[in-house]
Image (cartoon, rainbow over all chains, first blue to last red; front, side, top):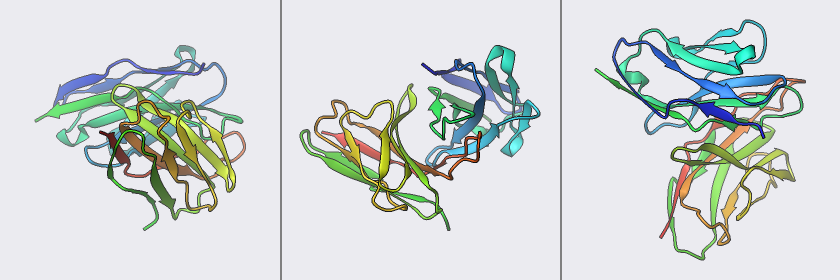
Length: 115
Length: 116
């Protein structure tokens, strides 16, 4: 069965530190990849997405992610985090053809950024 | 403003009672979804609907039911058969995907159900 693994459940960083959140998926065919973010008290919103083309995608608020097909990975990065990045981050995958929008989500990573 | 409205935000229920969570969208999206969010487990798909009067079971449909009589509305009923109903429930919608591409999901703010 298709699955998504996020390596870290909790991450604690100081402001200005660099961030990398790992995401691996199990499906071997064409995939669409997403990172969603849930700020405290707010609804889930899209951070960035990859469908095809340049494997390095840029999202909102300075986030980027790199799709490495050979590693089945889609890691999220940010060079310098801010206190306002404190949130829960979810990686999600669906199949590129015929899979409609049935996203499979990872378990999430809670990020706490300290000033 | 376009968006997805879920109600109620908080709901308490006694064991053995059915409860219905409302989800309305004014984004003119074809597809709607219900997810359940539990700590440490991410989001799991309960039901989804691609068009009016049609819906399919997701990964954890047992103990839940849905209807899709209108494009804008996709209510979820948590029945007494659901063994562990206390959770955070998220409704989402999306446009029909273009060929070969999956689209973005737009989420509501969620409904937190607690069974006493």
